[in-house]
Length: 388
Image 1 (cartoon, rainbow, N blue to C red):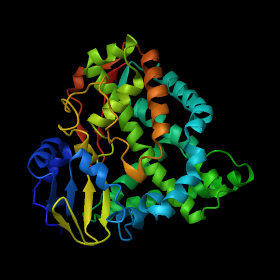
Image 2: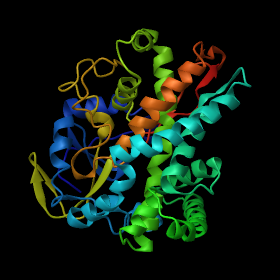
Image 3: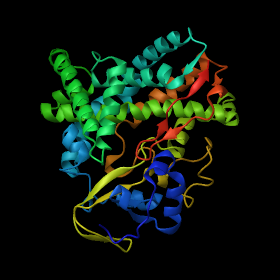
Image 4: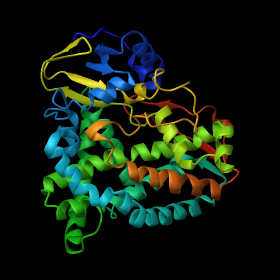
């Protein structure tokens, strides 16, 4: 373990609300070792941004890590040239031009269908009714797995998220993760021959056309599903909740003084659906007076950096007018989220404006009390019950 000061957490409380502990870490020990997480945590925004770029010390390559073991060695677990080659291979699928000219049309069409179904209901859980299917249908389009039901897309994504967070080694969680990855492989088996005959801009297709091995292709599809479903799903529902709780912020958008995209990006700073990113120490090093030992694990805590008082004014306040250039919502450095343009389009240009246009009187259902959020590595609401 590193020489960083020790900070103890109650895992249950940290899961329910990590922000009080993260604030104390920033104030007292910005780099600290948390025994319950078996890791050293970086909690200050600028320190995270600077050190995430030091891939020779803090490597994404984790041969025995849960993600690599359960999902295969995807590009997120690679550094340097090998990472850049695969990132370049997928660029035709996730570029701003492709998103604008190809995917956005499908996002609108699918979202409008989902909203049409919702019109038959007076109330419900916005996650199940809207955010989940919108996110899943978009992911089906981008990956080429149109043969997968949107409910299955959500199931396998959650199963992989649970698997790579299974630090305690629960055998049932691991078994379910294997079941989920097998389901993805089965769906790829069905679609790959079709894609080979008729190439398109999907991830499955562009990786094949770029010459990536089938093993690499499959691993990166699983990566896209693991992060491309839960985070947009939770961000859609969470941003709607934040706007309905803060009507003054919603009014700024309705009055043309701000945008839906601003709301999404501020929510992603404030709550951070992706709360951290793990790294392996590649060699012994001293960083900010802390000694690190080769092969130990560290966490860059994006959720903490996004509430750093030295960078953001009143960071615990949801404010869609603030400048967000320092936000770590999509990460930093060479592993900046490859799906950022897709998320911005899907959520800021399609899901949010179409939802509020279709249901201009939407409001939170007070009969269900306060919305509950959970998670510190991946954070989102459990339910967002609304009256449509």
